[in-house]
Amino acid sequence: MFTGIIQAVGHIAGREARGADMRLEINTGNLELGGVAIGDSIAVNGVCLTAISLSEQAFVADVSGETLDRTSLGALADGDPVNLEKALTLGTPLGGHLVSGHVDGLGTIKSRTPDGRSERFRLEAPAALARYIAEKGSICVDGVSLTVNAVDGAEFEFNLVPHTLEHTTLHTRRPGDKVNLEVDLIARYLERLMLGDAAAQSGSRLTLDFLREHGFAK
Image 1 (tube, helix red, strand yellow):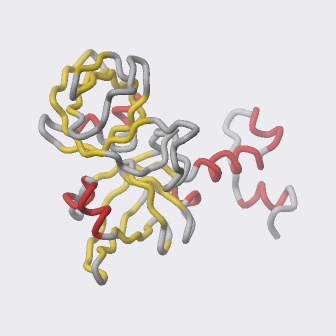
Image 2 (cartoon, helix red, strand yellow):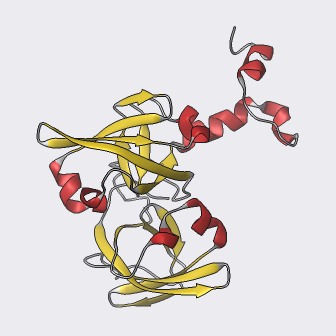
């Protein structure tokens, strides 16, 4: 688990295709690796990866085909910057929100405009994720915990204050760029729980007809 509070910006130091999978070497920049052991988790642009080898300022991780399909990691080139966060511990301040590091899909930046001293971003999420995004709720974008300011269909907006712009890779993002999205995990589990026994049936999903049938909607 993570908090969505970025601890350092590193960069891709190497890529090695391994069939349908990939092995990545990530230079960790200023991230303190003293307490990290092989097998520990580190979030890279919001993707939970397992360290299979460690050096003083880098780690290596395998990336599965599923992760490559769901995230932007496969499109990164050597030298590209990445947001990094070590897994939280019981003593870690929860400054953002609970983040699993399991990316749900890719969003597309639609616009970026100045808004006082901050910048306002507008993103489009995949249609299947829109129902999990709520005004003033939380969302994780490339590993950064953010508050949703407004929602319009599958599009949503958030503001980045100067500190976040300076200390994450989001200052490099432009309209058209793809970013990793992880919706609030409570919303995901709540939807599944509301299905009740129907969750065990193949193809079951939460629909307006289902909510009406079970008294959740009129």
